[in-house]
Image (cartoon, rainbow, N blue to C red):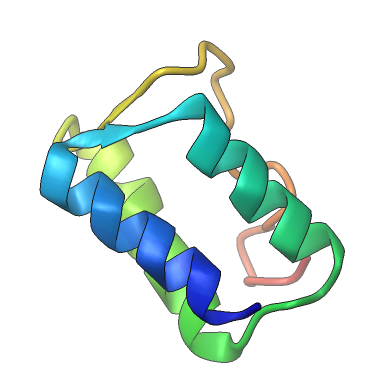
Amino acid sequence: MAPMINCLIQSAFQTGCLSVASEALMRQVLSMRGYQGYDLAALKQLETAIQSGQIQREANSSNPFALVDRRGKV
């Protein structure tokens, strides 16, 4: 299941938008601990892109990655 996070993040970078469905799937994978270290690095890149405006979110919450803290722990 780990490649799913990378695939969803790549899609967000290609489209410039992170869909609600993609965000929900990433949260599900994270909650099931179905990820690798490189997924956390990709999530950090996604977070930076969202903060800079490179990628827009469909969802309205202010903290898209509440499951991932600043140390990369879930």
